[in-house]
Length: 182
Figure 1 (cartoon, helix red, strand yellow):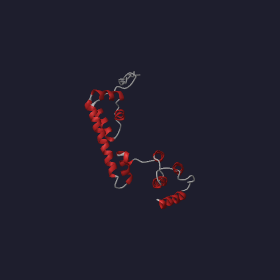
Figure 2: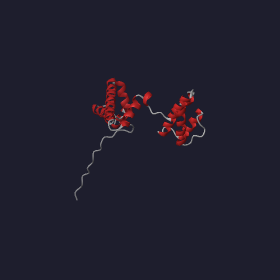
Figure 3: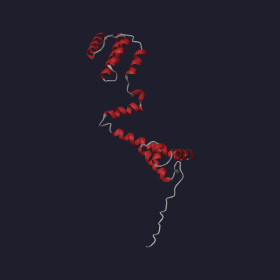
Figure 4: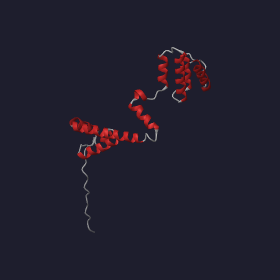
């Protein structure tokens, strides 16, 4: 019988235990920039490229031009999202509302029942006309679903308008009375 030769497979070189060594190679940097341009957060983009957060932060601190490239890539992502959003404004009015609410929130943000309640409590009602305006605004908010009818009742009570408002029909009747007196 012939003796069999033992073949030994070469093992791949192994590293020690611990965190993997990551380098900011030009390939890694380009992969990070591509991901950021698509909208990924910079640290997430680094991890997706196989670069540790520590190595990413260290590279940023040593290379100000890298930080500028990151900002540029983020701006490109932002422009891309905004252009896509704007392209929907012809077909969908909510896209316009979304842009207005977020770009100029002081003018266009959604008002909720809490805003109205704060204003009602802080601004005294001086005349019947002021009371009418406040009531109409509250009813419209309730109809639009921005406040509940319970909130409407509570606000009306705080204004002294009524103590028994519980239904929309009753509110509409009260508005008609106020309009006749206004």
